[in-house]
Length: 160
Picture 1 (cartoon, helix red, strand yellow):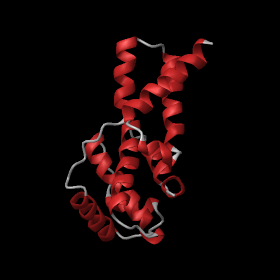
Picture 2 (tube, one colour; picture 1 turned 180 degrees about the vertical axis):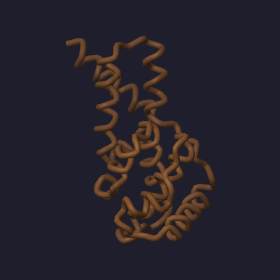
Picture 3 (cartoon, one colour; picture 1 turned 90 degrees about the horizontal axis):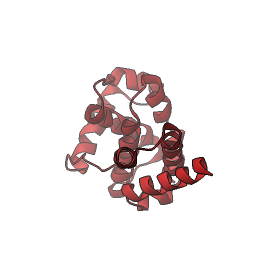
Picture 4 (cartoon, one colour; picture 1 turned 45 degrees about the vertical axis):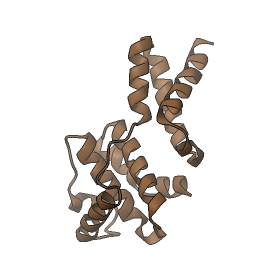
């Protein structure tokens, strides 16, 4: 259910439009998962939850932060700026302001430095990690395990 809702929202398009770093998208998905694990989110509220998570992730991971007006416009005014502001507060309070989350991209970067992998293997690893985000079962695995598995698979693909 998480995957269908996350990818049916406009977050990936907004992420691509603003050219946010990949960590921002991973943190957004993580925040959505964490919030939805402790709160019931109705389909009518999902877009404002997802955009609030994106806004918080941008504040944490990137220097550029889109305005609430821009995010509401990108969502075709499915919610107001005030609703986005309220949801951002609700999200932060629900998560106890704990935004530090180990992400698979952090671990992949460490692996890449330690092993000195080539660019092709790194790109394939990132692709596999993005594909893994589409499966809701992958949320149950540790980010380090996801990164290591994607790296191992990519190494096998590239070196064979």
